Image 1 (cartoon, helix red, strand yellow):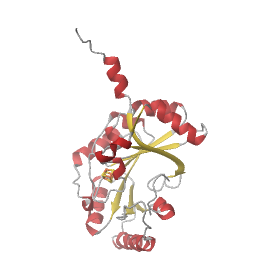
Image 2: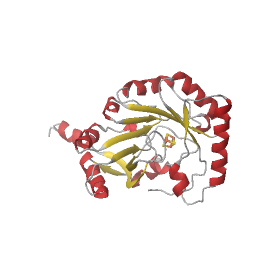
Image 3: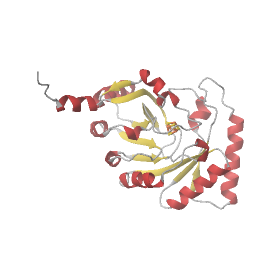
Image 4: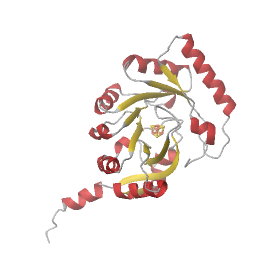
Length: 248
Ligand code: SF4
């Protein structure tokens, strides 16, 4: 018997995305849209393994049995159930969401009035970045254990050129701070946000907020000592409000 290829079936399969969780409405806790009400969609899979990753449940293959395969319409139905059908800012997160194919989700979602913001480390570029309303590129500093491929980050910046784009660097120590300064020098025309890293990644632990406040004050001191006046320092607002709790 001859088996006939069914490209239509292949395409249908490729339209599902690996979804870890969809939750909200909550608020965006960091970056350019900090404080804005939003629903989060967290996609599964990542090409990085940051030492302090706080989203390993969306990274490690050992968790992939918990990831659901959903179409764009499934995802938008889930969002509608959370917002009573009202359009909202949708924050796309991961993992590295750039490894997914999100054109259909973005196109259908925008037609429903949603606004899309995404954060990625800038290691994978996609043409569909141009469909986003906002793109945060968050290259990972030395403390992550990962090494930035600047040409890949350049490609992401080109792919997102038509969006409201900004950079974000998480700072754990002085080496990370020097890395953030390198990022600012490389991309002087993009807004840059700095936030203090939280290396307590246990979702059940009480975050040491006093330590985070102290580190934030120290970062502010470094920035002011360097007269670095076109950078923005923000705490991770969601960590201050809810600690490491997942799904808020
Ligand atoms: S890029 Fe983000 S999701 Fe991926 S391992 Fe690093 S911190 Fe975790």
